[in-house]
Image (cartoon, rainbow, N blue to C red; front, side):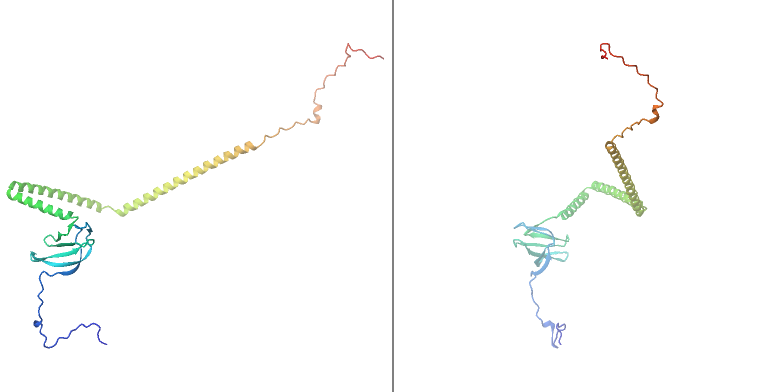
Length: 256
């Protein structure tokens, strides 16, 4: 069975590679490459936002008559995802960045603007020092003062780190854990005591209510009846003899 993928090719004995004609391709020819948007941009035609990292099938070409320290500069052509307008940008090896040419505006250039501002300030300072020797002395004094402040701050940070290096964080965590457990135990004991006091108070109140209700419902006991003893007549004082009854003067005696 023959190989499915041929790795070796046949070269005849009279093969001469110098006789192969060379293609004369234009220098500004374009290649189709797959790339991602190197920065955030906004289309000038429709206002569509194109975010950094969005993939495009772009055309790449070499910019003629533009080099930086022997490095070629490339231009890329992409199309807007909404209106299909053409957008072009090229490489910027001097600043290790990309430069927008036309078709869109670049957004969020805060870092780039900051770097440009720093370069401008540095250039102005060099120009001032070139023509004013007093300015050179003043700038050196400011730089030395700033350097001393930085060294003092660095020394303070080192001392702080050394103090913190002797701190036992495990012991601190253990102490914090023990204090939390003690606080929870105390809280639980207080809650139990309060619950027991409330239950005792409720029990006493219930006993008082039950005793009051029993007193109200219980009738008064009857008084005992005193019965005369049979021998009590012997101890009584004899009463005086009764007087004989005389007839009333106005009443006549009955006839014999």
